[in-house]
Image (tube, rainbow, N blue to C red; front, side, top):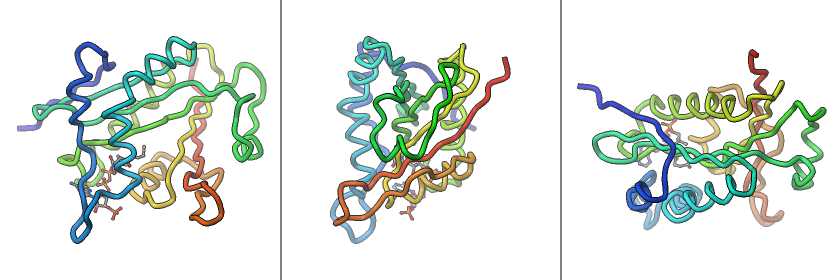
Length: 195
Ligand SMILES: CC(C)(COP(=O)(O)OP(=O)(O)OC[C@H]1O[C@@H](n2cnc3c(N)ncnc32)[C@H](O)[C@@H]1OP(=O)(O)O)[C@@H](O)C(=O)NCCC(=O)NCCS
């Protein structure tokens, strides 16, 4: 029987505990630790995601933390929030022009699926990003154009492949050390919502 997946917004009261054990990475054969770039994401969801989403909402950036559950607990999660173009980091500002107030920018900040859904051809990851894009459209009812941005570590092949499947384009490349702390490259997907 197929496990039912349900999406909903996470709430501090009910979901803090289950987020603390959300597991989206494991150590690979022959290695001591999980890959750093995946462990970072797991730590974010476990320790910071709820507080960060609430703070973002309170500060008017419309933070959302959405989770999907199956019979084993949290199966997938994502977060997104609005970005203010006047506060773009330099690298992004030179790669992305936003024309006028009807164009908005949202960052799809973190997205992960639980380990028991990984290595299965991307079915739940595809569902998660589809849900995220619709949730982003719903979050910006006035926008004529939405630039959806994502930052990806240059090691994170699974994540880059996921973004490529959904026609994200790479705006800036993540660069390995020692050329600076720029592991993360920016990716962008444009949505012109039908209104
Ligand atoms: C990004 C993500 C959602 C894409 O999911 P997906 O399309 O289903 O792709 P998979 O996870 O199956 O990708 C295959 C990779 O996962 C590894 N993998 C497969 N099953 C795994 C498991 N049970 N546990 C850990 N890793 C696994 C494969 O070895 C392969 O690794 P490689 O790219 O280093 O060769 C998913 O990889 C994920 O949740 N990653 C951890 C969180 C993360 O990094 N998020 C992106 C940045 S916010």
